[in-house]
Image 1 (tube, rainbow, N blue to C red):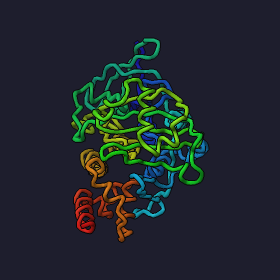
Image 2 (cartoon, one colour; image 1 turned 90 degrees about the vertical axis):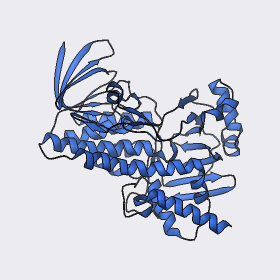
Image 3 (cartoon, one colour; image 1 turned 60 degrees about the horizontal axis):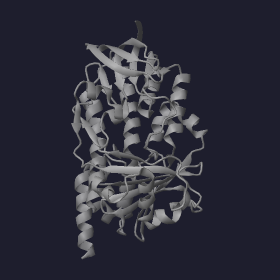
Image 4 (cartoon, rainbow, N blue to C red; image 1 turned 135 degrees about the vertical axis):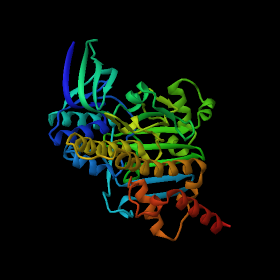
Length: 410
């Protein structure tokens, strides 16, 4: 049986894995990526946040992504009936990027994987991990390629960026239920022939359909628009089981989607994902670190998933490089506590979104524009900036603001 040696094995070629691999490779270590799927492949998480631009630049991907001419994203529009709340990334509290992109992930992820391979990282697609054995920090991983040929990879460290595959969490019983309620999404891509002109046609729009039901509308530069309905699983029981008929009926239920997509062509048969929120008992262990969706996934609202993927890939890549250089690494403080700061901040906003408290905040014309700037920075992904009170004391800040708004409405 073939046995290969590498410094670091990265499981998964998505954004988290590619960013980690690039940074470790830049430090002069040998990196190998194994990816179960064949790229390009479809995945949701199509709306980036400004925070990730730093990571794309540091990993050496930014200029390559610019060439794709994806739809630029300068903010987000939230709609509830006739009420509108606009967030412009130019008007945020934290000093950082003022724009990012809306991307078809198949193309975006392919660009990153291709570029990291050009950098010298060995990338093997259609290669599945079937077993991992740890010997201290060293490991031996068994993989099987598309032809059924088995081989082994000896590594000094493993970065698990396997996404929903969650290789190490499932293999070593680390999965843990999310603190968030179970939700379901039904989505597809439309040929957007009725796209409005100007900024309204280009920016992401989040429609509050009901308090616990919302719709994403994410336009791409290629004339295609991603549309998804998110709600409690029971909400979808009133619609046909057939995916296409279900989407047609869903589109008809809301004026914002009916006018624009009522007669639009679907690019692929609509898909459904349920119970996607998940957590893990630990983010690292002897010889490995979890990044991206292999750590924790909250919810599609606010596009936090791909942001956590790139943030964790960046952080892990640097820490693994330090570890291999025999530098001291405090994984608990420098990785787990750091990542959980951002995850818990977004968890508050996700939770308050579904209770309706955040709806009341968004659609209330509050005279204090500084507050809106601070919330805008959260929505831009700057959830590690503790100078922002809506980050540092996120739960209390949101709660107090909502109570103040209710008092002012009386």
